[in-house]
Image (tube, rainbow, N blue to C red):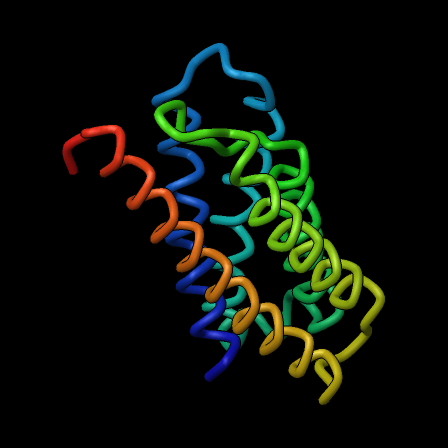
Length: 153
Protein backbone atom coordinates (compact mmCIF):
# COMPACT_ATOMS: atom_id res chain seq x y z
CA UNK A 1 0.00 0.00 0.00
CA UNK A 2 2.84 2.40 0.88
CA UNK A 3 4.51 1.57 -2.44
CA UNK A 4 1.37 2.47 -4.38
CA UNK A 5 0.96 5.74 -2.48
CA UNK A 6 4.58 6.67 -3.14
CA UNK A 7 4.23 5.68 -6.80
CA UNK A 8 1.18 7.91 -7.31
CA UNK A 9 2.91 10.79 -5.52
CA UNK A 10 6.02 10.26 -7.64
CA UNK A 11 3.99 10.12 -10.86
CA UNK A 12 2.25 13.40 -10.06
CA UNK A 13 5.54 14.99 -9.00
CA UNK A 14 7.28 13.79 -12.17
CA UNK A 15 4.50 15.16 -14.37
CA UNK A 16 4.69 18.50 -12.54
CA UNK A 17 8.48 18.48 -13.05
CA UNK A 18 8.06 17.86 -16.78
CA UNK A 19 5.44 20.63 -16.91
CA UNK A 20 7.94 22.95 -15.22
CA UNK A 21 10.57 21.96 -17.82
CA UNK A 22 8.22 22.77 -20.71
CA UNK A 23 7.14 26.07 -19.11
CA UNK A 24 10.70 27.28 -18.41
CA UNK A 25 12.86 26.87 -21.52
CA UNK A 26 16.43 28.03 -21.11
CA UNK A 27 16.47 27.81 -17.30
CA UNK A 28 19.48 26.34 -15.51
CA UNK A 29 19.09 22.64 -14.68
CA UNK A 30 16.71 21.79 -17.51
CA UNK A 31 18.46 18.58 -18.57
CA UNK A 32 18.66 17.31 -15.01
CA UNK A 33 15.00 18.22 -14.43
CA UNK A 34 13.99 16.42 -17.63
CA UNK A 35 15.96 13.34 -16.59
CA UNK A 36 14.39 13.40 -13.12
CA UNK A 37 10.89 13.84 -14.59
CA UNK A 38 11.25 11.02 -17.10
CA UNK A 39 12.87 8.74 -14.53
CA UNK A 40 10.11 9.64 -12.07
CA UNK A 41 7.39 8.63 -14.55
CA UNK A 42 9.21 5.37 -15.34
CA UNK A 43 9.78 4.65 -11.63
CA UNK A 44 6.15 5.31 -10.77
CA UNK A 45 4.84 3.09 -13.57
CA UNK A 46 7.27 0.28 -12.65
CA UNK A 47 6.36 0.60 -8.98
CA UNK A 48 2.62 0.53 -9.75
CA UNK A 49 3.05 -2.45 -12.08
CA UNK A 50 5.53 -4.31 -9.86
CA UNK A 51 3.18 -7.26 -9.30
CA UNK A 52 2.58 -7.67 -13.02
CA UNK A 53 6.25 -7.49 -13.94
CA UNK A 54 7.71 -9.36 -10.94
CA UNK A 55 9.01 -12.11 -13.25
CA UNK A 56 10.80 -9.57 -15.45
CA UNK A 57 12.29 -7.08 -12.96
CA UNK A 58 13.52 -7.88 -9.46
CA UNK A 59 12.65 -6.02 -6.28
CA UNK A 60 16.31 -5.00 -6.12
CA UNK A 61 16.06 -3.35 -9.55
CA UNK A 62 12.81 -1.58 -8.60
CA UNK A 63 14.41 -0.24 -5.41
CA UNK A 64 17.50 0.91 -7.35
CA UNK A 65 15.33 2.67 -9.95
CA UNK A 66 13.28 4.35 -7.25
CA UNK A 67 16.50 5.28 -5.41
CA UNK A 68 18.01 6.84 -8.54
CA UNK A 69 14.85 8.89 -8.98
CA UNK A 70 15.04 10.11 -5.38
CA UNK A 71 18.73 11.01 -5.78
CA UNK A 72 18.08 12.97 -8.99
CA UNK A 73 15.12 14.82 -7.47
CA UNK A 74 17.09 15.57 -4.30
CA UNK A 75 19.99 16.87 -6.39
CA UNK A 76 17.60 19.11 -8.33
CA UNK A 77 16.25 20.58 -5.12
CA UNK A 78 19.74 21.13 -3.67
CA UNK A 79 20.91 22.79 -6.89
CA UNK A 80 17.90 25.09 -6.75
CA UNK A 81 16.53 24.10 -10.14
CA UNK A 82 12.93 24.44 -8.94
CA UNK A 83 11.93 27.94 -7.94
CA UNK A 84 9.17 30.44 -8.47
CA UNK A 85 10.43 33.60 -10.14
CA UNK A 86 7.87 35.66 -8.22
CA UNK A 87 9.17 34.55 -4.83
CA UNK A 88 12.33 35.35 -2.97
CA UNK A 89 14.66 32.57 -4.06
CA UNK A 90 17.11 32.95 -1.15
CA UNK A 91 14.47 32.83 1.57
CA UNK A 92 13.28 29.42 0.40
CA UNK A 93 16.76 27.87 0.62
CA UNK A 94 16.04 26.17 3.98
CA UNK A 95 13.06 24.31 2.52
CA UNK A 96 15.10 23.32 -0.52
CA UNK A 97 17.98 22.08 1.65
CA UNK A 98 15.81 19.99 4.00
CA UNK A 99 13.78 18.44 1.20
CA UNK A 100 16.80 17.83 -1.02
CA UNK A 101 18.76 16.12 1.76
CA UNK A 102 15.74 14.02 2.73
CA UNK A 103 15.28 12.85 -0.87
CA UNK A 104 18.99 12.17 -1.29
CA UNK A 105 18.96 10.15 1.93
CA UNK A 106 15.99 8.09 0.79
CA UNK A 107 17.63 7.49 -2.58
CA UNK A 108 20.84 6.25 -0.97
CA UNK A 109 18.90 3.91 1.36
CA UNK A 110 16.91 2.51 -1.58
CA UNK A 111 19.96 2.02 -3.79
CA UNK A 112 21.88 0.32 -0.96
CA UNK A 113 18.95 -2.01 -0.21
CA UNK A 114 18.54 -5.34 -1.91
CA UNK A 115 15.06 -6.00 -0.57
CA UNK A 116 12.15 -4.21 1.01
CA UNK A 117 12.91 -4.37 4.72
CA UNK A 118 11.48 -2.59 7.74
CA UNK A 119 14.28 0.05 7.77
CA UNK A 120 13.62 0.79 4.08
CA UNK A 121 9.89 1.17 4.74
CA UNK A 122 10.71 3.39 7.73
CA UNK A 123 13.00 5.55 5.58
CA UNK A 124 10.23 5.91 2.99
CA UNK A 125 7.73 6.83 5.70
CA UNK A 126 10.08 9.42 7.20
CA UNK A 127 10.73 10.85 3.74
CA UNK A 128 6.98 11.16 3.20
CA UNK A 129 6.39 12.77 6.59
CA UNK A 130 9.32 15.20 6.43
CA UNK A 131 8.96 15.91 2.70
CA UNK A 132 5.20 16.45 2.88
CA UNK A 133 5.52 18.73 5.89
CA UNK A 134 8.33 20.76 4.31
CA UNK A 135 6.45 21.12 1.02
CA UNK A 136 3.29 22.21 2.84
CA UNK A 137 5.20 24.79 4.91
CA UNK A 138 6.99 25.99 1.78
CA UNK A 139 3.71 26.37 -0.11
CA UNK A 140 2.10 28.29 2.78
CA UNK A 141 5.16 30.52 3.07
CA UNK A 142 5.19 31.15 -0.69
CA UNK A 143 1.48 31.95 -0.69
CA UNK A 144 1.95 34.42 2.18
CA UNK A 145 4.89 36.11 0.42
CA UNK A 146 3.03 36.38 -2.86
CA UNK A 147 -0.05 37.78 -1.10
CA UNK A 148 2.15 40.50 0.46
CA UNK A 149 3.45 41.41 -2.98
CA UNK A 150 -0.12 41.68 -4.28
CA UNK A 151 0.11 38.76 -6.71
CA UNK A 152 -3.17 37.08 -7.57
CA UNK A 153 -3.77 33.33 -7.14
